[in-house]
Image 1: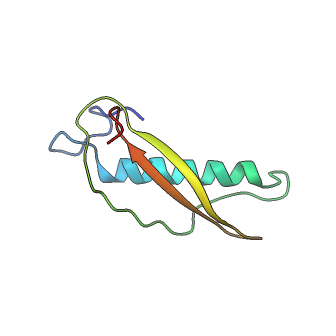
Image 2 (image 1 turned 180 degrees about the vertical axis):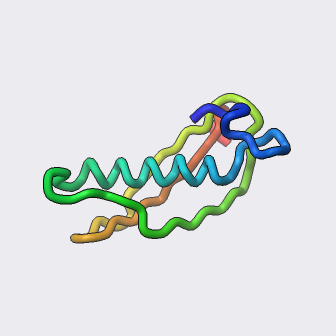
Length: 86
């Protein structure tokens, strides 16, 4: 995801909501790939986010890892890092 004026908060750094939207997209996409999309669909039901750093430029990259693959729910851990891996 680009880190620029389209994803900034008013103070010129990556908006936490943009990070959460990226995480939601990664988790839902991952679940979508694991289900029969002709009979089911994947949506987020809960999200918890901790922002322990920030970015001012470049890109934000998300990596999702499934923690729980249940019959009707999936739980994902999604790490978001900048161009430097921070």
